[in-house]
Image (cartoon, rainbow, N blue to C red; front, top):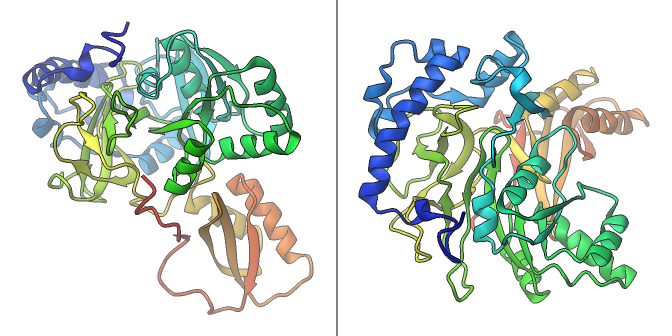
Length: 422
């Protein structure tokens, strides 16, 4: 399927005119398909003439669909809020992510659009991939699994955890590549060193689900692993990905996937911002089974000027630059303010709480500050159990006196420095 050894296909190197012509042909079809086959978009786009939506300027006039609205509509119209363009019997998997929010996939080839990112990261047909993204309920593992297999790779579905077994598996099967969160590869390699087991077969990695900090990337380079990242969501699949020059030098920014139309808008609105200005990432997917139109990710980024020196001609974004709302990704999982709220409501002693996210070494750390007049001996442990139950991860609990937390409306305070993370 590849056009050359350097590019996944000819779509990546199209001229501006060819890309505009393809958009003018594809966009009206996708808008019409969404309106005709998706009950939710039948309402949202009832007054829209698809033939008049043939470029990005016209697309920018359509309403924005926000993840929070999707969650509400899924509750009102289970299971999926009427957004899919296929019936549930045509789906191969249905997933449950924190929020809660539900996603699905079909048997469509490379449903999540991940194959292109794997190719850019140096993977080729016949490679063996050790995939450590979670396969449990959430779609992360399946996104990478489907993309790697679409490229012609064989996948070890490792998932997360059982690190010693993963080390032994890598030593025995000798995979050439890793897929997973940025920091879990370090966990594996450190454990291999501790066990005196050889995991040096891994030479390349595609990572997602968290920030790849420069110090961590350099550590992988020093250990002989070339790591690239992609930006993906459970709703849209792979949105953008990193690339390299033929000499192996990493290029700036992340290329927008050919299966996605990306806009940067002023947070909380649908209004595009000038090139280079930081704003919220809005994506329209060209997936005919799940035609999300102007879907607001809640993530921040900015468009980089000019074409990538790698030869690919699509837009580039600076990378993931934080959240436009207070939803935050911690250890590769989104944590929503609503989840903390549900945990807090199980403990009437708590008058106010917030999550503080920091970094220690190369790992995310979640701390939960709780204002409470009670100092009951078992309260902190009970709160920790509730936080793990509702937020799906452990956090250190610190009890504070009423009035200690700032009166600034924050529920999640992300104190990590992302300025140099990408």
